[in-house]
Amino acid sequence: MMTVDLALVLQTFRLLAAGLLVAASGYAIQHRNEHVAAAFIWTVVSLTAWGWLTMLPNLFGPSFVTGFSQTVVSLGAAAAGGCAVVFWFVYIRRYTGHRQYATTRRVLVMLSPVGVDLVIRVLMVTPLTSQVAPVSGVLAVVYTTLYLYLAALFVLGIYLLFRLTQRYRQVPITQVAVLGVAIAAPVLAVLISTLTRPVEDGTTVSILPVDISSLGFLLSAIAFMYAIRTYSLFTTFPEAEYVARDEVLEDLTEALFILDPSNQIVDMNAAATDLCQQPSEDTIGQPIDAVFDDLSHIPADGVQRTTLQTPTGPRQFEISVSPLQDGDNARLGTTLLARDITAKTTREQQLAVLTRVLRHNLRNDIDTALAHTNEITDPDVQTTIRSKLHSLAELGTKARDIDEVVSKAHEPRSEVDIVGVVQSVTEQLAGEHDCEIEVRAPKELRIVSHRWLLSRLLTELIENGITHTEQPTPRINVVVERANRHDGPVRITIADNGPGIPAHEQTAMHDGAETPLEHGSGVGLWLANWITESLGGELAFDQREPTGTTVTVTLWSDSTST
Image 1: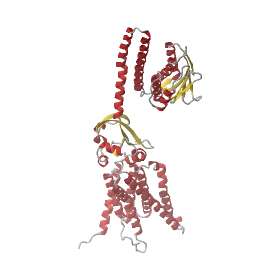
Image 2: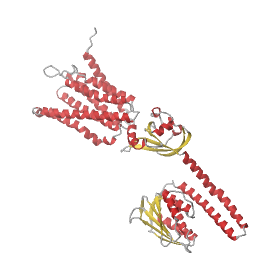
Image 3: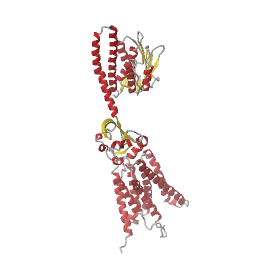
């Protein structure tokens, strides 16, 4: 019958554990550029140091470590073991999306109990302290407190990992088990081996007859290497999802994808699952361009339009891309929001056709009709028809203006002297109309705005007061000022002496509803309202006594005033 040499088996375990711990450290360091790899690397490196220092006497023989060196090795092993558990917990915190609780300052605070324990261990081996009777009792309390602290970190870390598996289908329960074994195995093995260590009279504390610490480190090294090869330990998607899921992901009716830095899908909402036409389990983990060919070149951020195949056929989508970043501005991934704009695109095409009809076809027909009015002999009928045709021509011009405003609304802004724009507009209108315009404004007032849109807005509002008055001489007062003396929004007030704007038109613009344009100012006021909104401002109306209207334009902008 073959006899097993237990000492040889244990030495083999030690050699394997020592080698695999070094290999695991090297394997982890290869991922040093990954987002959450730093804490993981520190965990494996600390555990490797702990394992080597613990197994050192048995690897090279008791005579290799004696006297002072034995004390140093013992202290180093205790410190490395405590650090390994703390760094493991820090890694779990960062991995599960709680980066704000794993800053450098907080890590140092979490390491402080290990430091206190190390200091006490150093004091214990000094000749003076070791002779004091109460020291052993104090040390027992300190050691017990530290072990309970490290045990609490382990339990909380396992809880966070388990909670992650409940929330995210791509984190399997086996990953929790492997990471738990990786840190628990050496802790338990060393603890049990410490309790079974021989005492001075030659007996042992009989839990186990041999030192099994090497087995614990061997299991830990195998678990870490298996985890690195099998699971996404360094992906940023748990943190990215932690930021996005609870607040926006599941409540959106639009399709939302969470991508990692390599544009692989790490999560998606129900609308995105419907859009992909396959179960989310088959989609998560794939590159986004493997799911949708038309998304092979997505920008880092911004908006683009594309056509995607859906269960109801090809549809037009607006793809909004935004980076996900943590508090340190490190890129965690990307959110990709797909909004179905098929109806919106169709509406834009319809508006474009309508605008073209108003600008070209209608204008040509009106010019033809005006030419034939000369054949009408009744002057009253001729005047009436000409007036109506000119109103239609003006409507076509407004449609052209609306088209131009829409095209310029998205252009970049720049610094504009608003007083200069007001003076330019009022001088031009005073030369074109028989009217009186008074301007009260500072010498210069600069804001960040769009010069053309601002000029078009002022032209529309001032000209509206000029052309729709029933007074012999239209009078317009324009005031430009700050809402506050030195800062705050810019306020432009335009007051006229006309009949006032019908209440139904003011109400329609305030409520955003359509209304019959019984007054000639209708389209112009809508145009002014749209321009004001595109400039980030506010438009308000007030009736004057005994007659007239006051229009106030309020503009907010980062600006400087002189």
